[in-house]
Length: 197
Image 1 (cartoon, rainbow, N blue to C red):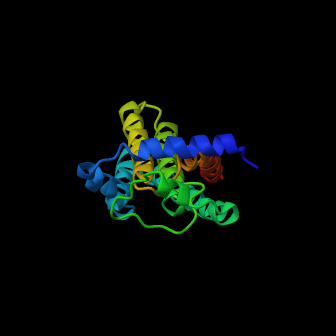
Image 2: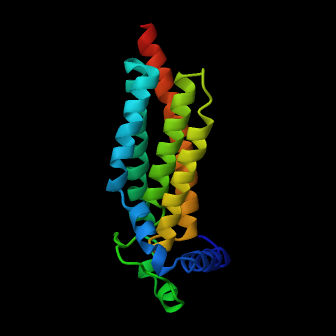
Image 3: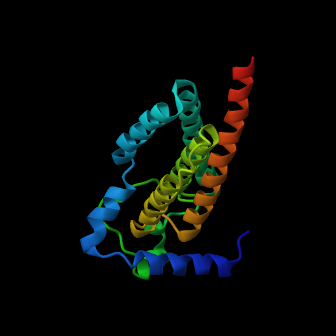
């Protein structure tokens, strides 16, 4: 069991962060939190990976991304259904104490841990480390900074939308990063084995 003091801290921190949102910024956060708007960016990255790495390594990185996002997404759903922690928007204490709920929020009842955070940080880690691993001529520092900032903003948008507690985001982010890094190196070992055989 999680101590009540940690739960209360998480609720208070989430409420404070959520109330940083303003009506004028709600369209931005609604856009950032939408899943489908990022599909073109994913496709662009795959095209870039093929162009930069060649078709064999491009396939390896693409399969790594797919495996990472499917794993992080499905595991987060499994944990949500197992833990059954209500999202802030369905939590009576959060609503009573001033939780903001911009238009456009949707989701099922349970929020621990955040699929948005695990998926975006998983994608960020898998894409960044995949590029570095298969192309050691470049450091991809600018891309790494950019993609992790993007993942952090998308994850933060879930707090503004009232969809997740800060704890949901932190756990999801760490899990996604670890999953992305791990899948990159597991797929790399498999790729090297296939190439050598």
